[in-house]
Length: 138
Image 1 (cartoon, one colour):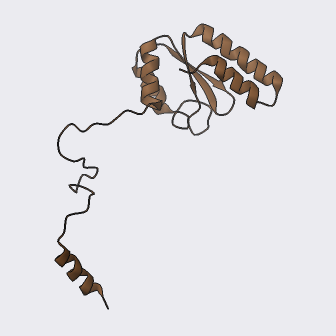
Image 2 (cartoon, rainbow, N blue to C red; image 1 turned 90 degrees about the vertical axis):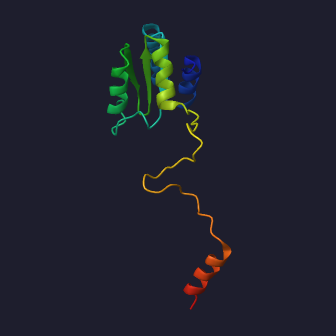
Image 3 (cartoon, rainbow, N blue to C red; image 1 turned 60 degrees about the horizontal axis):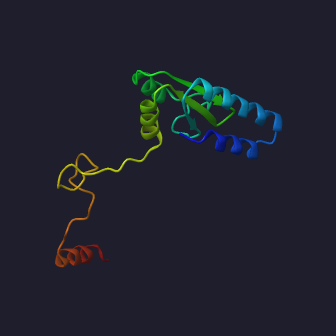
């Protein structure tokens, strides 16, 4: 969750219209009183194509969490998602904005392709490599 005072300073510094910036900051304060945990979203991963709402995958994920949430749209690319539960807010941050460290569950190398065993080059002896090069030479 982002510090809302920091967000308000960013809005005041970047928006040209002082009255609009003041109104947005007032809206942020009012929204934070309704929702104890507020997360700022301004990332393309969570927006729908029109840029006016959360995409359907995010909304579906939020609905599956069985916790109260709300979305407040701030102009074009900013929005606030309010949560009533800290655990859901933390899961939201990790799911949509966090980078999790991936650890292999076995000693075998990771296989990103279903049909090949690895993307790494095969170990080939030098004689066969030079023989292939000779066949392609003109």
